[in-house]
Amino acid sequence: MSEAAKKEPMAPRAVRHSFTLTDNETGDSYELPILHGNIGPRVIDIRKLYAEAGIFTYDPGFTSTAACTSDITYIDGDAGVLLHRGYPIEELAENSDYMDVCYLLLHGDLPSPEEKSEFDENITQRTMLHEQLVRFYSGFKRSAHPMAIMVGVVGALSAFYHDSTDINDPMQRMNAANRLIAKMPTIAAYAYKYSLGQPFPYPDNKLDYASNLLRMLFSVPTEEYEVNPVIARALDKILILHADHEQNASTSTVRLAGSSGANPFACIAAGIASLWGPSHGGANEAVLNMLEEIGTKENIPQFVKRAQDPNDSFRLMGFGHRVYKNYDPRAKVMQKTCHEVLNELGTSDPLLDIAMELERLALEDSYFIDKKLYPNVDFYSGITLRAIGFPDNMFTSLFAIGRTVGWIAHWKEMMSSAESKIGRPRQLYKGEVARQFTAVANREHTSRKISWAWLWGGQSNNER
Image (cartoon, rainbow, N blue to C red; front, side, top):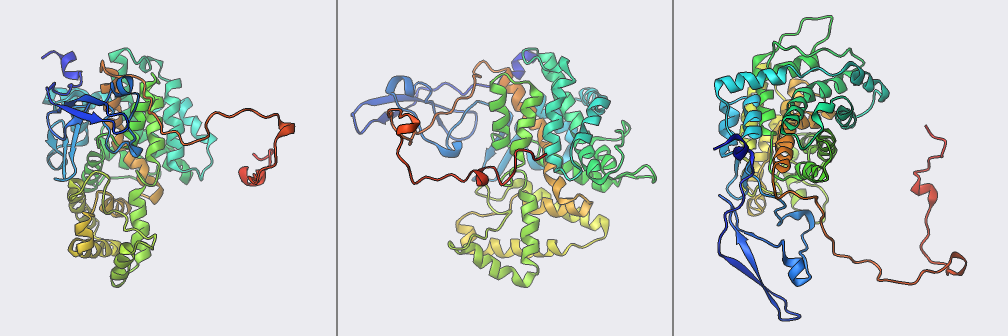
């Protein structure tokens, strides 16, 4: 198989099965083809439905809609399975490293020793930031959230690397992919250092990806910094576990932005903005907040009871998942990694004791079993990251570092697919029908009042 053919996304297998849709209002019937992927549910092809029937589907959140074909990641939520290019996430996390997984997601296969060495070198040689881009950081307030800085800096990369913005050139697409993977740890580490008022350390090309990230985050010029290999390996696993997760909100954002022809840096900046949401990348921080609110193991039963009360807004964070209706396979790896980190550091975290007891009670409770609310990857990752020394506001930035390769892999796949077209979801319109315009002098007073002070947040036009 040629290299070009390997990069081309695999189309669903053509089959003769069809789905009959009947309009109860008109009695008309429409035959829609059923497509089969290599694995997973069947898919009804509705691309011609609007043209033939004048109707389209309604699917808030796109939970039952496939917007693309892909051969990167497969999830079976009922069975608790996550595969990257066919490899189970558990095997990759235990036997591989993040660079290995990056190559796999980008190129379709695990690298040979020679390919691995060349790929590692390509990433290592691109870790520095342009000095003018570094000065961009001084335009932010010291209190700025790291994700706010990352959105701005990543978007600004397109102003510095014009040899990586031609989306029609496969070589430029690969250059952009390598640059984004290489520079994201530097960008995130500088956002953290800026908030502390500490100098920006240059990357160290002698170190592996995770070790270099740790050194940039925690070293200071006045002291020697020695990377703990156990902690570096734990961070590498965390990056692997977050590398890709199919068509999630941020990945879909990257694809939608990319469908317009936007440059890759702008697309990844859009993905970072989407990831920033507390329902997506901020969930592990929410788990820590919940465990602190619970306080002690003795309080767990009352909080479990609150979670079961439909009239109580309290939720058990870190349990359940939009896709998984079984134990999140990443959570099992994360639990083991959490214990390895705490054992290595010789510290005990009372929040971990609460988490372990909460997990035990929830998994034995019929309410959570019936609703298939199992622990997800966020349940243990927050505790692990805090033990390593990361502040809470850096959790999502680390997520973004790991997920960058998934975003860029999906973007590259979309760019090379003949099926790609600009994204344009439809809507079910519930507003006013056509009505006649009335001049302002002839309009009657309505009860709808607008407080302009509220609309502006009480801010004056002169605020800086």
